[in-house]
Image (tube, rainbow, N blue to C red; front, side, top):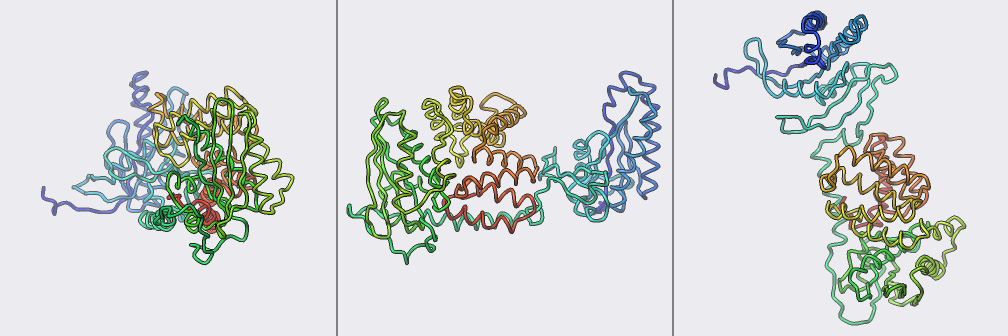
Length: 537
């Protein structure tokens, strides 16, 4: 038949299917046929009552259409109510439960039958409904959400067979307490088009990324040129601002790079816990590694006044750390010092450097800040080294599934050496959560379900002695589970401990956006961009 002979129309489609029909037929064929006939008649009566018509009813399936999507959804709920009453009168092994899917879509009409994606989507959505429940498509939801006194559980965008684009799916909640409530929906992003969202993200990426890809000049002399305060990309903060560059690995072993990276990152972490500092994140400050770039250029690009640079030399158990703090506005060294000790002294050496910076910049530490600075999460040097190796492999902006998989044994080694190492548990949870999205479970040879289960178990262990990392990853976990209130609660605790951590600010912004407060998220987005301008996400 030629295309122009087909009649197209927008219609509401209801698809119902019996759960476990084959099992029931295998147990008692005659009784199952009798029950099916009775249930089908009840369903047909409801369809007729709501001005719909049955199009087909092969086997255990019923296909119907309605002129109104409101009638279709109301009918689906009423069908389940009627069938529930009917099933309560039947023996347990004879109960016949249905799933129902409803879609509003374009179809092709040929005599008394309809075809097309609109019908297929209804059938696929029915498979996603709970037994005894109703699931509807995003197009149906958009039309009925403010017209019917039901609640809606957002089940995400689902890829369904033979349909090119993902389909939004919502489960109907009939209890009065859910009246017109939408649970789990990403409220901010659900109200803007994908095109607008992508455009906004790209704009954000261009603006923030542009600060980093700005041309870097080569050294022309060994003299440190002062940075012009007038030429800063944005004005300096009203509190001391600092970038800690990646410390050079001066050991003879290139494999020790993780250790010098770890010391630099820990200094960033410790300084960021001091609320009177503005500290550039590792992701951005480490982007200058190996580049012969002038200090004044870094200061202008990152909008900071102070630069900390240094080197680490590790030979056996002996350790030497050289560090120098530079005032980029004058080009002068504020101080330069050398710290020698044993590997077992690593924590005290880091504390000395942090306290020296605070003292030099006239920052008075509170008792709480002093306490946080001396808490390194573990007293085991071996566990600490294993943790640093894992962090170096699985740094949070890396999307390399191989690196994430490689990091897991190091974090596992860390908690084996110190079963109370909260940050190591949190890092494991993050690795498994990120892995569940990126497919790391395939490299590990485990199921997606086990990947998520391990993430949850490691998070529980991390929360036995919570740090800002543990709170942050717990917030991320709740965001993934659409539990917005719990996500926000944990994100707030992470921010309270370390308000200058870029990832804490990112998760806090996400929690606010997903809980329906996008305006409140803006300051956290701005702070994240300020302390991590290289972040493209």
